[in-house]
Image (cartoon, rainbow, N blue to C red; front, top):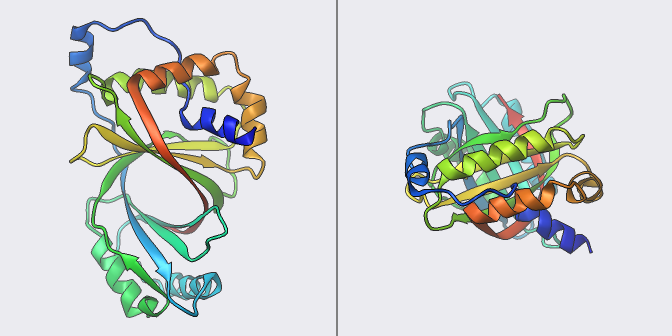
Length: 246
């Protein structure tokens, strides 16, 4: 049953609309998100004999050493797959400046001895993004559950058409008391696709979503409009931790 509810959540939620004429669709091709940051992901595996405790100890010293003095504003998060496999993790580096800090971050990791702990795939792909929905409440957001989806726009649709559905979604979800955020990430080289990230700040988020959103009268309609614009697949759940926020 929880899987069923999660599937409804994943494919999101956007209110039914009438068919759109071609001039409307063409006009929306010119609309782009107002990007606020860029994200880069570093996929890692623990080396033999090392585990989460070693990583925790390393990151504690890494941050305390003020390695960021020559780096502009950024966030660093660590994501662990929500499964029995604790050998893998992901660094999520968020950059709020126009400077390329990824290479500096990698260099400083290596200089501090990180290579002994884990081996990583160094992917320089940069994803620009913005917060579709941000928490209004001040809470401890250092740990949360994140759900990452790979999405593709349907033919004839893009962010310009999608933004109307997003506005309706944000307006409706804000009426509910849910500790939740949503992020939109896009690779400039792949404009027909994007990454959607759900961030839940409650342990019992599935129960909360069931009570306050899935049973909401507008939820199914919003889901239909989302599906009209884009299809999302490959949902992955992670236990996530915000390590450093500058």
